[in-house]
Length: 140
Ligand SMILES: *[C@@H]1O[C@H](CO)[C@@H](O)[C@H](O)[C@H]1NC(C)=O
Image: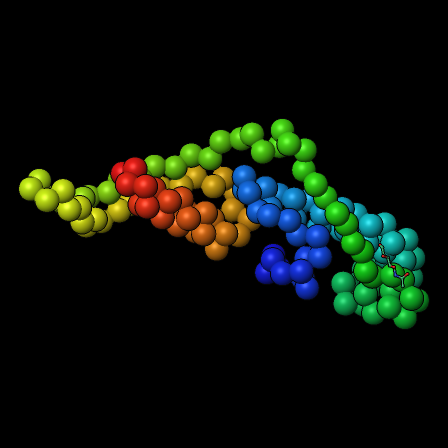
């Protein structure tokens, strides 16, 4: 997944509701379909002549025949696609000074069910952001 800059993602909007990964993956899937459609007849022709065709050879031949190997897509998810639930749980061990009210977090354990991970770094970011928000508003 590219870094969200206007150089790498011209129409990248705000990321919210955990929709960025899904929207990016769907845009990539649409591009993939375009590229497969452009390559499939060449691959079949090469396969008839040579038996099996490696990816490298297919792309080299496509390049020599000026097959357009660039595709772009813009995908905006429907609003209803944002309504799903992620499950997670967290437990913190907190020391509270009953005289002053001062709190000190000793340890936190978090479990987050992200389903089938698209990118573990993004999942970790989601967990950390939510954890920090809870920490800031003292909701633990
Ligand atoms: C290749 O295809 C993409 C769309 O899939 C298009 O934007 C681009 O202009 C095409 N490039 C050429 C050189 O035809």
